[in-house]
Image (tube, rainbow over all chains, first blue to last red; front, side):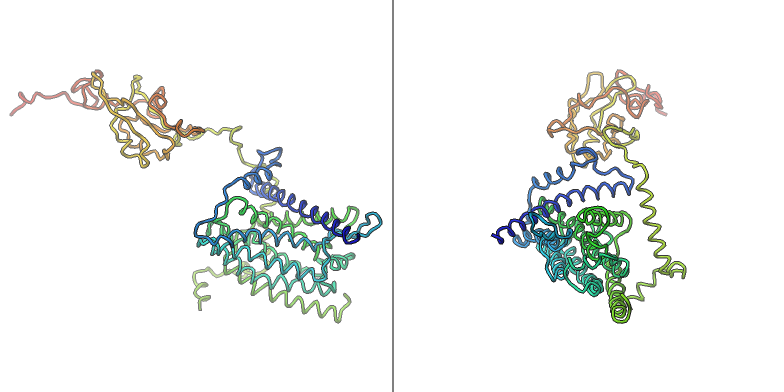
Length: 330
Length: 194
C-alpha cells in the first residue's frame, strides 16, 4: 500500500514537474524573443495574441506539422536519437532539484523533490556531459560539413568547460559537506554561498553558459559561420527538441545557480517554490541580457579562457577555501 | 611560434587598455548600453498598419506606360525579353498600318520575376518600368502571370516627357521623314551630286 502510494505521489510529482518545465520552456522562448527584441529596440513577437503571448503555441503547431526530413546520406538511427538525448538529459537534471522544504499531505511528509540522490551533484554533471553527446552525435550523423564542425566544436567546448564547472563546485561541496542538492540548499539557510564563494559563482556561471551553448559561447551553432551548426540538417519537431533542450537547459542553469549559490528555495515572505522560480527567472533574464550584449568569442579565445583562466582560478579557489575551512572560522 | 605570428598583426595595447580593470569597465559599458536601449521605444514600424512611402526608384511590380500623348510606348523590340535573366517576359510583335510597332500580346510571369530591373534599363522607349508597389502576392501562382491588359497603366511613369516616335527616324502618323527631333530634312540623292 505504501509502495503504491509512493509511486502515485512520484508520478504526480513527475507530471507536475514535466508540465511546468515544458510550459516554462515555451514561455522562456517568448520571453527571450521579446526581451531580446526590446534590447535591440525592436518589437518582438506581437501578432499571435496580446503581446504575442500565443506565439509559443503557434510555434509548437508549426514545428509539429512540419515535414520531418532525414537526409538520405545521414545515419538514420543516430540522427533520430540525437535530439532526444539533448532534451531528455536537460529534463532529467530537474529530478534532483529541491523545490522547497518537505510538505505534509494527509499527515505524510512529502519531499518537494522528485528524488533526493545523495550524489545529486554528480548526477547533474553526468547528465550535462551526456547532453553534449546529443550535439556531437547529431552533428556527426547529419553527414554535413557544417553540422560536423558544430558537433566537434560542441564536444571540444564541453571538454574545456566541464572541468572548470566541476572544480568550481568543489568549494560548495566542501562548505556544505554533501553532494546532495537538498543538503546544499539546507546549508545556505543562513548565508547563500554567493557571498562566501563569489569566485566560484563567477566560474560556475561562465562555464555553465559555455555548457549550455549560448552566446557568447554559441560556437557549436555559430549561425553566421556554420549555417546552424549541429542542427543544420534538422527540421520539424526534431529541431524543436534541440530547441526545447536549450531552453530547458537555461532553466536547469538557473535552478542550479539558485541551488548552489543563491540559497535555493530559501527566502523571506514568499513561498519557497516561488522563491526558486524567481531566482531561475532572474538568472534567465540575465542570460538574455548577456545574449543581447556580448559578441561570440573566437574559438581560441574560448579555449584560452577555459584552460588558462577558469581552471587555474578554480584550483586556487579550492586551495584557499580548504585553507579557510582548516584554519579559519567558516 | 604560432602565437608570436598571431601577435604581429595586432596593435599593441596601451597599459590603460589592457588591464583587467579596463576590461571590466568595457563590459559594464556594454551592459549599460543595452540596458539603456531596453527603456527606449522600439523603432519598428508595424507593416500592415504603418505603410512607409517607398523610394520612387525601388523595384517591384512591372508596368507598361504610355506616351505623353496617351499611346502605348512599347514597340515590342524584344530587348527586355532578351535581357531578362529568368526569361519571364514574352511577347509577339506586330505593326499597325500607320507604321507604329506594338506588342500583339505581352506577358510577364511574376512567379519567375526577380525584380532586377534589367528590362527597364534595356527598354529604348521607357515603356517597361518598375514601380514601388510590392504588395503583389497571390494564393494561386498562375494568377501571377500578367497579361498586357494587367500591365498597362495610365500615364508616363518615371519618364514624363519621352516620346519615342518623336526621335526615331521612322515614318508614322506622328512624324514624317526629316521631321523628327534633331533630324535634318532628307536630301535628294539625285540632285546633291557634285
